[in-house]
Each structure stands twice: as structure tokens, then as C-alpha cells.
Image (cartoon, rainbow, N blue to C red; front, side):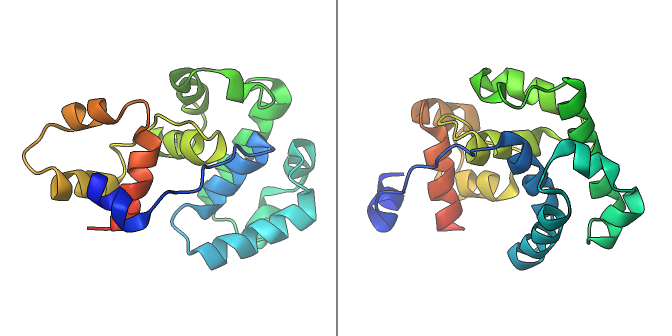
Length: 174
């Protein structure tokens, strides 16, 4: 890790998202799409709904599909909006919960798996000690830079800065 830090220098700290609801919706929009395609869909969705849960739910699923969302993303985005409106997830206070409680709150939503929840923790809530073993790039980075070592042992040495370690491994792209 010292070599990666020396090679890439210090990284800018990640700020927490101003609006966790919007951040989660945008994270879903970006799944399995190019940055450019995701940004285009996100801009259309923002123009149509301003990322307001009630406005999002007021749009027919076909209208969301017309904005560029896949049917799976329509289902997920509507479920996130419903969770926000019903109080199932209190997005205003989500950032105050411990990491595992955030994951537990998000996992019941269709289309949200552990990887998405962990990326949300890292990039939307700016949590400093998250490392997603569900991320292929991170697993490959561990295998490349720490061959034969148990992931838990390596990750234990990086705590409480595992998010930063993950960012360096992504930069290295072994």
C-alpha cells in the first residue's frame, strides 16, 4: 500500500452527499452503464422529478422507462421513493446510523445488494472504513498486491481506513 500511496499521492477526501436519497437513486442509475449514459439519464430524471420521491412515484413506470431507465431500475427507483415516503428508510438520518445498520436498511429494497449498499456507504455517506469484497476490482487488487494473504488479515491492518485503501487499489487497476 505504501507504494501505491507514493505513486498516486494523497487523495482528496470524499465529502458526504448533501441528499442521500438522490445519491442512492443516482447510484442505481449508474449501475452497469457508462458514466456518460448514466449522467444523461440522471439529468432527464432530475428535470422530470427534481429527485422528489412523491414526484418520482407520480410518474408512470412507462414514463420512467421513457427517460431511459431499464425496467429493473424503474422498479428499484420506485421502491427507494416508496421507502422514503413511507418512512421505511429515513434518508435524513441514514447518515447517523452505523455502517451495518445502513446496509440492513437498504438490502430489502429490490435491486439493492450488498455491493450497492457498500458503494453508497463509501461514496455517498463518505464512510472511512468500508471495503467491498463483492467488488471484483478490489478482490483482484488484493490478489495482485497481497498474493497468498488472507483478505481479512490485510483488511484488518488497514482499519479504520479501508475506504481509502480501496480507492488506492482502484487507482492501481491491476
